[in-house]
Image 1 (tube, rainbow, N blue to C red):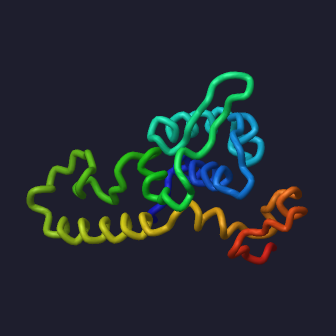
Image 2: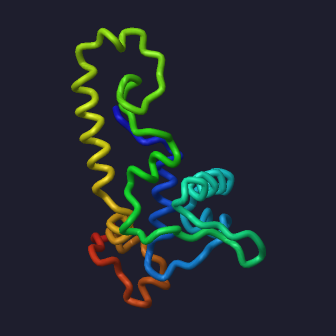
Length: 158
């Protein structure tokens, strides 16, 4: 099974939260509370995303985190790479750092490169804006529901 790390999964949840309409700079604690990501993990993720240039951070009483770019200019691939490193399904694909002992002789390597490129392309083609605009109605905050700011492509809630 191919699966995102918990770090990348939570990173996408946090970035999606920050990309929702009406969001302003929020503290790590506010973000952790709103997303239900454990506080220590949220802080680690926020720092990594800021180091990667996906978030801006400001220290101090009025400090916090906000998106560094418009949500439409951030891809899922960028978020995953900021938290997990290069997207690579096997040790031998481009950008991966592994210790495969049969890499030079492997007949499947070329096809793994093709598969990895296809997956990377799919993740590159989905923007943070798309993720934030497809939030199920059940997950909107009461404030968002009250303002009638349902996402453009809101899915039916449970």
